[in-house]
Image (tube, rainbow, N blue to C red; front, side):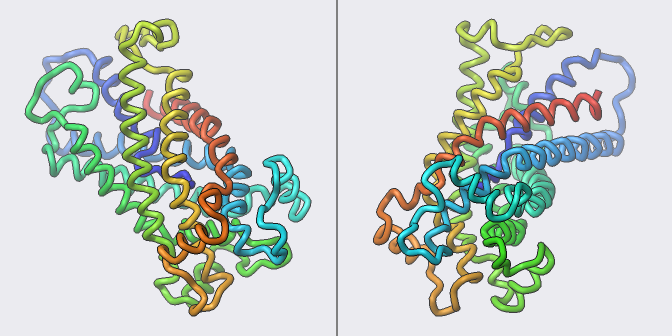
Amino acid sequence: MGQQSPQPLVRRLTLQEDHEKQQRVPPTTNTPPTPNKKNDSRAIEALKQLFCGGMAGSVAKTVTAPLSRLTILYQVHPMVTTKENRPKFSMTIRGGLAKIVERGGMLSLWKGNGTSCIHRFPFSAINFYCYEGVLDILKGPQRLSDDDEDSYTNTKEVSTFSRLIAGAVAGTTACVACYPLDLVRTRLTTQLEGKETYRGITDAFAKIVRNEGTTGLYSGLGPTLMVAVPNFSISWVVYGSLKEYALEDELFYNVRKVDSETGEHKLGFVLTLGCGAASGILSTLVTFPFDTVRRRMQIQGQHFSQGERLTGLQMIRSLLRTDGLKGFYRGLRPEVLKVVPMVGTMFTVYETLKDKLMS
């Protein structure tokens, strides 16, 4: 699905890192910095975090791009195929990847990935600042960090409900603002070799606006929001619950990472990978049907006239009538398979960049 979770893994890693840095700074008796210096420092740190998160997301998307493209081709194949007796893009994942390479060469596995990487930075930035801004409105700018809340009781403590509200608002805002890039990425990804409608990102934007109007850039936005908001909620709750369990239960004592300076227990790579993969797979299973609907709605303008295009509800009814419930889960296997390498790559790249920029 794009894996465009409104609250990405790197955001959770960032909150943990903020607390760890505060723990390592020894207390001083110097005069506290002025508010302006505090704000400047916070802004610089935020920019560094956004850069690390954006790069980690872009690299992870590039690594898993072949599986992402295969997922989308499975989802929309019945709409673009010219062979009525071939309702599936391929019977196997290996066969599907081989089919893509046979038609367009090895690089065609990454078709549309450039747009996906460009989409990552503004999406992360908008999501990051909206999330923080909503929490500031709900609980004030002096609220405790995630880790401080575990140790202290304070009127500024942020509840799970507040975080879910902030995440939903941030995810919705980021989705709406960056949606045209997501739509263009889907259309470029589903183009058949030799029958391309668009020559690139700018050409796609120009032709969509000219042929479908500005509203054409937002085709399928409704189902997309129905994917993004519950995807965040499920992912955040599951990840948070598993993280708490892994840090407290003695079963994972030998797997946890211990900070050499503070002695604090952290998840480390293995537990982060496990918690992130579990939350990602569960959220994918729940939201994937809406992801299939949104992908199909995104390419309607590319293949059908105005009178032939369906609304979200009509698309759901059409899928049920022609393919049954299984039609909503076409492409689920490659989508699930990409979760582990996606989480692992994001964690590794983020931690590497963070050590270089924030040490």
